[in-house]
Each structure stands twice: as structure tokens, then as C-alpha cells.
Length: 114
Length: 112
Image (cartoon, rainbow over all chains, first blue to last red):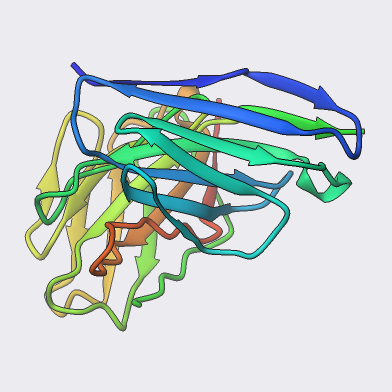
């Protein structure tokens, strides 16, 4: 069966510090991978998606970047965090084939920038 | 991209059916309707999806109108654990990936 791992679960970082959040998927190959962010009390905002190794599309220009060094690994990074980067970050995957495949989400990382 | 409109919040009594509406009047013929829910501080969870026929699974039923401009998610016997934000999504398709775009959702509060 497929599983998605996302860590850490919570993170408190000072302003100006770097960030690295990691997401890995098991039990499938060549998935679409996504990073979403959810600010407190708000909906989910798609940040990045990837259809293959080294292929990253950005939905919203911002202080963050994403990389996909391996087929089932997706990393969200920042060189210098801002207060506005605080939020709940979610990684998700779905299959590239088929018309109606659902997406599976990790348990999220709650980032607080102080 | 087809947009969806949902009520901001709804209440439901425990044990009763919860009917969550969604309008998607600009839906295209090849777009599916998906429902997800997000319990507080967790990742969204897939519930059900459909194209034009009504669908039912162990979690819920999905009723799609004949013109496909709206749908209703039905939780037949709501429990306190069904308290969550429910998202109605019309699936976006492009050449690069099968993205899911989330709107504001409906905050369902199941009350004892």
C-alpha cells in the first residue's frame, strides 16, 4: 500500500533562518507531488507541484522553493524565513494516469516563525 | 477552471444526515467533482468523487444534479468525529499535472 511521510510535525524557527521540510512517498512510482500551505483559519494554497524528478512548477511567487531530487522525494526550502511563512504545510501525491485519481495528503508540518 | 461555491458553515445534530451543498455552474464536461474533508490540524482526507452519476461509498453519498451545476455530499448519520471542513473541488486538468485547487470549504459542526 502507498504511504506518505512528512516531517517534522511541528517546527519553530527564528526569522531569517533556513527551512527544509521533507516529504517522501512509498509504494508508488512517478507520482505527482504537491506542497500546500494553510495559514491559520484559511484555506489551502497550492505552492508547488512536480510531475517528475527535477521538474518543479510554482503557483505563487514567494520566499520558498521546492526540489525533487528523487522520484518519491519532495523538499520545501527557504534560505531566510519571514514571519509570513508561518502556517501549516502539507505534502500530497496522486497518480499521473487516470482521469479521477484522488490525492493523498501527509499529516502536515506546523511551522511557526518567531 | 470551474469554481465552486459552498456555504461557509453548517450545523448538524449528531445521528442526523448532514447535507452539504456545492455549486459548480461552470463545470466542464470532463471535470469530476471531488469531496475532501479536513479535520483540525490534519491533512485533507479524500471522501468521494463523481462525474455525473450519483455515487455512494462507506463514508458518504454524492448526489450530482442532471445539469451537473451543483452537487450535495450526504453524510447519512453524522457523528461528532465528522466535525471538519468539507471541500468541494472540481478537478483541474492541465498538461503538466492533475492539481487540486481548494476553496474555502464548509465548516461542519456536528452537535450532540
